[in-house]
Image: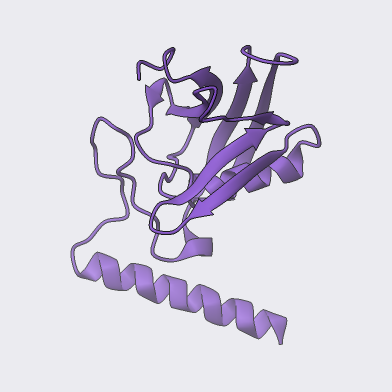
Length: 159
């Protein structure tokens, strides 16, 4: 029964992709400067497989750390999915997030280092050196993306 369900799901994904391509739409990212414009594949598990590196760094409070987790050949999805994969792959990588309706998930903490509006600290997210203007729910990494979660202050980030 599982084989039949997986085959049916894959067939539906292929049909959805063919339908998009027949309508002249593409699955390639739009090119803009803020890097938050990558479209989620219409079919979650049948997006092409990509490689993404997640880096979390803290040199601001408590014990400093830099943790790098390469994620190899995972289906293209939103950044939150890659964070979850990083936590599964690397025992020393933990994160907590809060969901906000109409906005998505906000990263509260990584490895126990918590963002704080009172202290004006947060986890800044950048892709290949470009600060993202969207969050982990909206951003869909591209192949070979290096995503940096840097614990910083509003002031250090220019706010």
